[in-house]
Image (tube, rainbow, N blue to C red; front, side, top):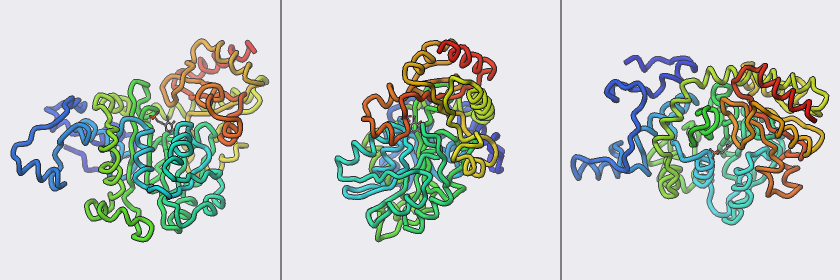
Length: 418
Ligand SMILES: *Cc1c(COP(=O)(O)O)cnc(C)c1O
C-alpha cells in the first residue's frame, strides 16, 4: 500500500494507521471484541511478556483496535507513540501519576477543566503531592514556582473555560532549562489547530470524547509521548528501568506499565472504533467549528443583553496575539464563553433555547451550552470559582457545525426572552 508518504494533515486524519491488507480488505478497523489472544507456543508467550515480541495478550493491556487508534493519533500529533485509555481523565491521571512520587511537586496553569482541578488539588494532596497553581499565561510566575521538587509543568493549550492561551514555546524552554518536561492537554484546539510537540512540548493529552469523536457517542483519552525529553538521573532516578527498556519512549512505557495496566483504565475497543469513525471528518468539522465560533462571537458582541464575550479570536482578547501566532491564523477554537446580567438571566436563556442543546460536553457537531457555575462547579467554594474564572453570569458555548444562521437565530430568540 501507499502508506509511507508524508501526507498532509487532512489526508492523515483519514489514512494514518489504516492497513486494510491486514483486515481482509475491510476499510474500517475490525472491532477485536476479545478479552485475550491465543499464543502458538509457550516460548512465544514468554517472549511477549519479556517485551521481545509485540503480540497482544489480554485486553486490559492492549487491543488491536485500540492500537490502530493509537497509530492514528500519534501521527496526527507528530509523536512516536501513544496509548489510548478509557477517558481523558484516565489519560491525565495515569500520566501525572507516572511523573510523580509522594512529596513531589508540579506547576500547573490555573485555567483547568474542573475534574482536572479536583484531581490535582483534592486528590493528589492526599498523597503528599503539591500542585502549584499559577496564571497559565504568566511565564515568569511559572518559572518562579519551579523548585528542586518540581517534576513537570502542566497546561491546557486553551483553558477550559477560561479561554486563555499560553505561549508554549516560551514555557517549554523554561521547563527544559530546569530539566523538567512540559505536559499539555490539547483537547480544545485539537492537532488541526495546534501541534504542541512541534513547539517543544514533551507530552500531549486529549479527551477523545470531544472533537476527535465529534458525535458524542464514545468516550476515551489518549497520551502521546513526543519522545524527545531527556530524563536526568538526578531528578528522575525512578525512570532508569523504563529508559533501559524503551529508550525515548520511557515515559509512555512507565505510564502504561505502572499505571494504565494496574489501574485497569482500558478503553473498550468499540469506543476506539467509534472514535475512528468520527476522526475521518475531523479536519472538515474543525474548519466549520472555527468559522462558526468566530461568527457567533461577533454576533454576541452586537447584542445588548450580552455583557462580555470571551473568545481568543476577538482582537481585544488578552490571548489574541499568542493565539494568532500559535494557531497559524487558521482560527481560534470552537469554544467561547459570554456573560449575561446574572444567573437568573443565564437560566432563562438556557431554558428558552430551541435548537441548541443544554448538556455537559463540548466539541460535538451539535452546538452545546452549559452554565458552569451552577453545574460542573456546583461543589466549588466561591474563591475557587473565582480562581478558575467561573462567574455566576457566565454561559459556556461549544459551537457546533450547523448552519451558523440557525445557531445565531436560536441565540437571538433566547436573548429576546430576557
Ligand atoms: C472533557 C475534558 C477532559 C476530560 O475528558 P473525559 O473524556 O471526560 O474524561 C479533560 N480536559 C479537557 C480540556 C476536557 O474538556
